[in-house]
Image 1: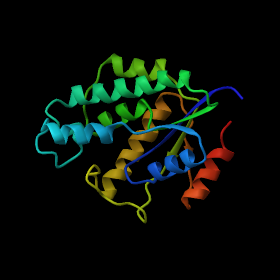
Image 2 (image 1 turned 90 degrees about the vertical axis):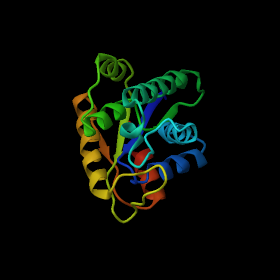
Image 3 (image 1 turned 45 degrees about the vertical axis):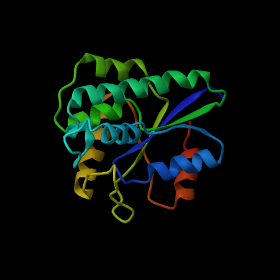
Length: 185
């Protein structure tokens, strides 16, 4: 099997992290979402405007914050080369940065677009908003309605970049895990 990079993405609260943990339990290599640790760091360093909404808009410099996320995801992409595993999974991909910036109506330059075009994934699995499992937490500030809008931006951004997003159906973590593995090309 050729090495493959697989993105697991979706709006907040769609079950991505649970699926990633299931993949790790099965000993697949997974890169974790980096924004949660960045949010916690921003809270610790008080580098925020009293974070009460998504940190992408509430930090003192959203463009810088998004650049950090972009660079972190590019680093993850590059690090996959050194992994011995044939399949590498990502909890969100580089295009997620653009999707969120589009959602928040933030401008970005060609560096963001070029990062997406120069670092392409083999497949993208998109978990749709699912109200029955949606829960807010200390790093998830969006309402379910906002999550649906973010889902739309994720789908549009990945599609515009040439990806065929595979919608992961609702189901147990095991069922979603099985669906993803069955549909890897």
